[in-house]
Image (cartoon, rainbow, N blue to C red):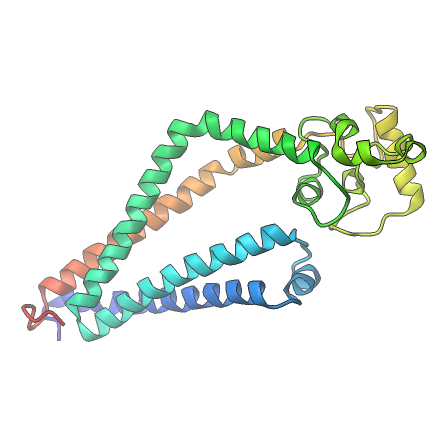
Length: 268
């Protein structure tokens, strides 16, 4: 049993904190596995969360949940069980995991600060390519972005005139097609049916380049997404700093417990 008030408090704080950490990691891991293997996951997300992610985004999110969930699960398990058993070995693994978190955040922060301009340019180029290579309406990443951010095209809706899809349309249809349905305000979720009247209004507004629109989303997606990122950057930084401080606290509590174990010389 740990000796001293400091060690005792450290032990119980580590147990309580890491039990919650362990459970949340298991939940995140389970969510990722469910999204990846269950064929009904997409319908369930659309029904209860009211969001329809493109398949490639859904799978990428699932793998991210699995990776992060596994890391949190292992870290929480080592911290909780290490504190219960006062195991120097498990606490050492726990300290190592927390150190990885702190170093990872530090490296990511430095990388973003140094490469910010290049990353923004890469995102801009990728978005332009998404518009240029747009092949058909449906469950695509670009459709998802346009609906979620209430935008159309990378910088302007007229960009779709030179898209792969526009060039492949028969002449009689091409004359009446200017933007995908996801550029129309009536479409709230991917694959939502839009009435013929709303579609005609949307296409006519794109054709006439109207400034005052009822159906057409006129803002470019690049500026909208970048504005959202800049607006919420303070929140993101606050969350990362909070996580780093919790990791530092966990390391301090673990060291305190290790140094004050009754039989601290035993590596078990």
